[in-house]
Image 1 (cartoon, helix red, strand yellow):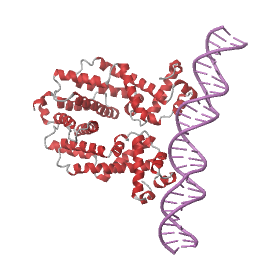
Image 2 (cartoon, chains in turn purple, blue, orange, brown):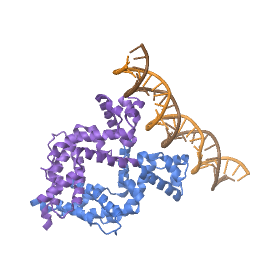
Image 3 (cartoon, protein in one colour):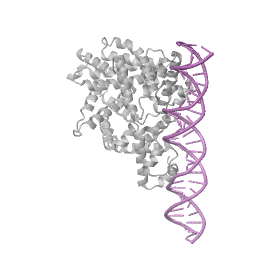
Image 4 (cartoon, helix red, strand yellow):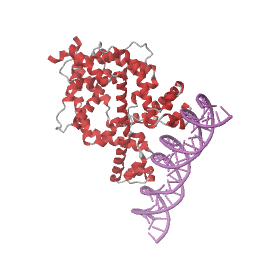
Length: 218
Length: 218
DNA sequence: TTGCCATGTGACACATCTGTCATATGACAA
DNA sequence: TTGTCATATGACAGATGTGTCACATGGCAA
């Protein structure tokens, strides 16, 4: 957690520092990110930095919280209606919102995407507790979200009960990632308007048929 | 490429150095790996190291080639019969072999698994050319392998032609990763014998039904 | 034996980074 | 005005890392 000194800072200064830190972490990843460069870019002195934060991990945590807060703004409209969605609609909406977040806030997006791979031993446990914190703040986790949607769809008979929820969940989560990646590539390469989500539709229809009850008797 | 001096070395010494380098890269990843530690562990001097290799990238490349050579030993039995397999059998065999490789050569496995995430800018292009090199040496690439299998299965009517090959390929490759991960976790946590591949079977059957022609008319 | 050449060695120069500390600044209260 | 306290600063110590270079060693050929 940042020190009180940082919290007391005028919002503008806080924003600058966090922004520069985001750029640094996004560009170099955690391990290679340099406090040196962050303070140079932010225009604060070395001494000040250590009066704001304990160390690199500390500011990194703050950056992660900021990013997750921003991302939640995009996801919340979907989450609020989560009871209404079946699994497939939920997946589609989540993918679209995640990518829209990336398009409109690329700096934040970049970090969340592939910063998750540090080799510092302490880092893995730190990231785990980070996730816990984020889930706690937002009263939600991907697992609980998707498990609920899966159970809903099971109850509705949209999904065959021949598969275990664990396997469906794994399947689901890995597809979310892949669909996001493909949709992202599609959205960033095309100059076309926003509307073409045919890639998501196509991948989801494979999933839908794969999980459909009709297989049960085949 | 390593210098001639390294190539001239007695095999035992070469093995020691590459082994220690593998441990180092596996433990710390490329960015945080230290030549210092590699030479300490290998018992060679700093000067010698630079007479063997240009720099860290150089020895890393050699390590990657060694790993891919080892992995190919596991995959080759499958690849030799690739024409005989349909997509689903091929996927199953590839996953099983990849995990068996991991079980029997964990050090090598670890590096291949998640070392692919360096942030050094040059690194991304380096890794790309590395892959090219490996594919060239083995006259194969995952893409070509799976595309062929998909086309075979399409020809046999096992797969509906309502989906594009690109989407099926994406689907396939991401599932290979996930199935490997799950099967790996299963194999490393259980003390049970080797035989239980039910997780793979379950995930593949979702894929099989998802891609099956019968959906076409539904 | 002598001389040559491939190989081995570690001290060294230079760079980068982190975290600390003595000191400066500036605002506000007494 | 003066004293106090939060904040700001950058020089500094200490760690770690890379790549080089002048010199040592040891085997082999003449």
